[in-house]
Image (cartoon, rainbow, N blue to C red; front, side, top):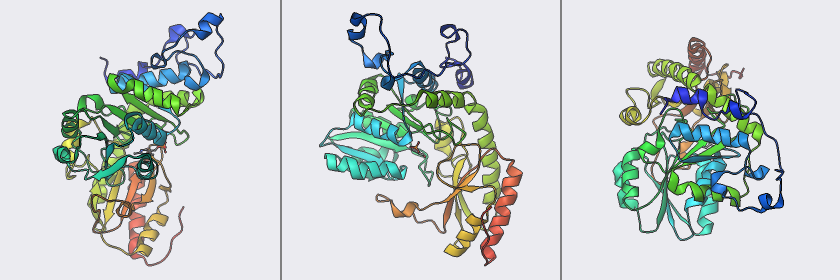
Length: 394
Ligand SMILES: *Cc1c(COP(=O)(O)O)cnc(C)c1O
């Protein structure tokens, strides 16, 4: 099997099929014309991805899906319109009314919203678990548990989960393990070797890489491929071939971008740890992080997203700090070329565990800027914590 960097350059390409073109072209279509009515009416196996109708995917869609599947060592993958729909599809594919679902308390909060507002009324019992539970998940598994939904490291709070231990306990009872792998991307992990059955990505983040694309992708082992593909069909999701092209284009440079994001993020995170205003940096790539050993065991690298817990300051000071940053945009999403900041409000939605850090926390996405400039910007903004006067955001 070629190494991940080689797959990034070669997967999802078939120049011989497209007049020698390096990239798989954008195929825009609704209708697919058949030579005869017999051909049109012939039974088709959706799971094998026939080119049959625009909503079911085009060669551009399949090229992107094939590249992600190869990178992750999956049986197959399917694109969805965004990352949240990838989560929705994966959960709906495996769950039935009357079942019990275990979800990490550190999950991306819109995923919790889907579970609480949509799965519960369908008769699915949703239980949140401590992300640090590891093999202890065995005590929460029931005869009617339909799935375990993980995210490691967790959104906003970055706890690493012992996925192999969770998967061993779940598989002993025939229960599938789903994971939102957006942070680690298809490049930095081999999810099926860790025991994950269904791997989910917001391709909106690092796969797109330029903050100009919404896409999701779900990859599965052989067992869960048909249910996931059928669910995408039944819920009528389709993805524009232009977006699939952009996602595949993003994949080509994922490796070099991630190496730079990780290098920059480590430099900024180490610097932050040494600042008197900072209490802790929540980033598994740091040796001091409680999840470092699991991160090192299970992943090949880190992306550029982490949180920082400050020493206690009042809300006005925190606002001065965030508004005072000039190079960090204030906004949702991450994984693009540029640095971003948001304030972490994780305590408000947790139910299984308490998240009560010693001070306020901010989440930083470290982009591809020169880290020395990012550090200088953070230093001048940290100075504003003590300044007692408002500054305006740049
Ligand atoms: C952003 C994000 C999603 C959702 O992706 P969208 O493309 O915005 O729908 C899902 N999971 C995680 C961890 C995310 O950060």
